[in-house]
Length: 457
Ligand SMILES: NC(=O)c1ccc[n+]([C@@H]2O[C@H](COP(=O)([O-])OP(=O)(O)OC[C@H]3O[C@@H](n4cnc5c(N)ncnc54)[C@H](O)[C@@H]3O)[C@@H](O)[C@H]2O)c1
Image 1 (tube, rainbow, N blue to C red):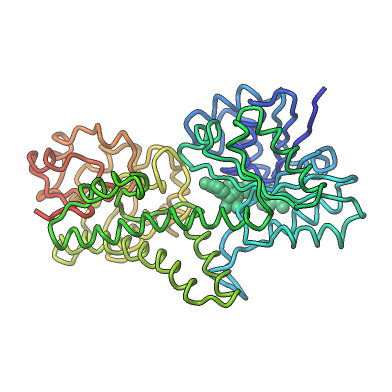
Image 2: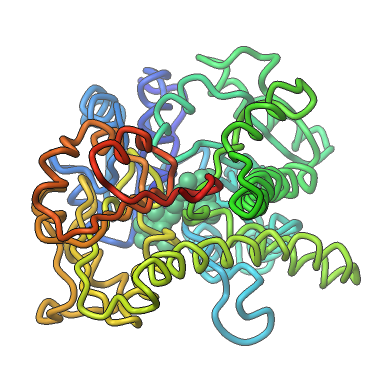
């Protein structure tokens, strides 16, 4: 009864939401999402999904058990599928050749081996994971050397969703990019995948390219986005030194249609699982292809981000005359951005670790991040007296010397700052790492305020 069977290997932040959207939009497609992590699969089959995204619960509930399934049976899902998406993690390699730069492809490689072993017929294999250029070649060579001679097609179809807005991005993508071989078989595979997306995405938004352009375009897109943040963050430091206001500068340049207004918000720094890893991956590729100047150019995007996080933590220490020892600091937000429970590479980790090194006491509150994740991310134990995770912003702020806004959760804008001020040790500080709050209002209440790229008053 189904026209196409899709399997997606990897039920993470990308695999889960992407497949839920395909299942919702294509009622004649059967979608099975598989993962080796049984706990994650159990969560996808429960009311407590492992990924928090606005609107995700609804689209999973609509399709689950009808044409959307979550399971740990990777082998039979591979065998049954016509199209296999590979959506496993591709972290930065931490060892050996290319350590701290190159992508660690061991998960992709192990999936390629499983496909070779269990396919039982020709498949269309879709790289959804972000990977270095020419990975498709590596996948093909694994399939050819260890497979049983089936003529598989490998496509590149990178995902451009942003966490926090994943469902909206998937529903209405700027573009779908599909790269494939230029052979008739490759072109036919591209069209088969384009037909799936064509159920809800206008054809003119489906871009067809060769494999290598598609793989590279994903890395370059993330590098350009990260570069915009590092660029405006570099200017935020200059604003603080000159009494210019970074939001006014961003607004003034963003109205230039050649520059545009998006991704010009100065902050404590970018985080997330992708920007740093993908820029480092690009840096590694440039080095590998003998282009050290290009590698250095892109590496500076990361250097600026590290500096911005450190600068924020140092500003807190300096405000307390270089000692935060035993000061209680209320950290509002731990996720790397609002509307997600993802903490991978969140600036909160660097900021908190630096302040813990300075012997501060931290009281952390995040609306969606689980307590154990925070302890794990900070390499801390439950019995660490200098770290507590609170159930509300009010609890975190009670008795604190300062409030640090690390994530731009909407609920922080609506806090009752008059009451919070009363409950704090004076002088009471706010360090706004997202320029989220109304600073004039806070000053009128009596707070001392420091924000990113704003004149220090
Ligand atoms: N998170 C994002 O915002 C985002 C956006 C676009 C692209 N990407 C890319 O998508 C890919 C996946 O990212 P993510 O955030 O979903 O990662 P994730 O870590 O949330 O999920 C990956 C999943 O793959 C599973 N896995 C690993 N090896 C496996 C195997 N051999 N068999 C079955 N399952 C296996 C893991 O258990 C994990 O659940 C990465 O390459 C990432 O760069 C991520």
